[in-house]
View 1 (cartoon, rainbow, N blue to C red):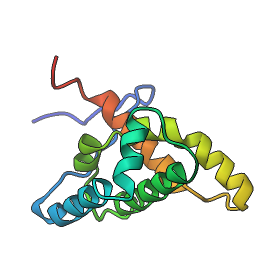
View 2 (cartoon, one colour):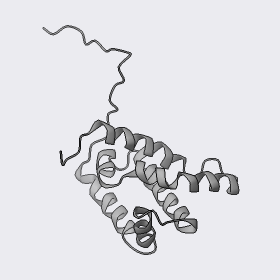
View 3 (cartoon, helix red, strand yellow):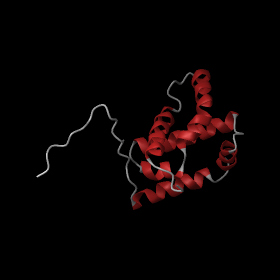
View 4 (tube, helix red, strand yellow):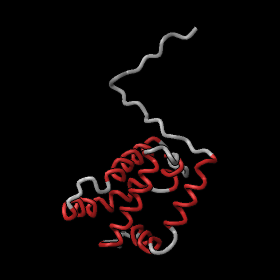
Length: 133
């Protein structure tokens, strides 16, 4: 018989990410459809090349905020979204836009779900080796 499990409190435990099921397919296809259709597709392409700003950046933040709400409310699995979208890297590129919008719009909560999910996406990325190595 195995003894009791021992957890070292000094060693951080890996976050358990929700796993995808077939129920996630409609949400994922919807996310992909929105992101790869106008008006967001052009802005998303510019984000990937480092050339997005202004209203386009705000539109992308708003979209990623909505995706993050789905993740936070467990309506779509984290592992599927985090494998599909580099939300942590998008946050890195868009966080300045969020800071400015929070100040100018007086809404300190603007983009907060995106920010929280980006942190989780970074943990996800850090816990998994590259598929190409």
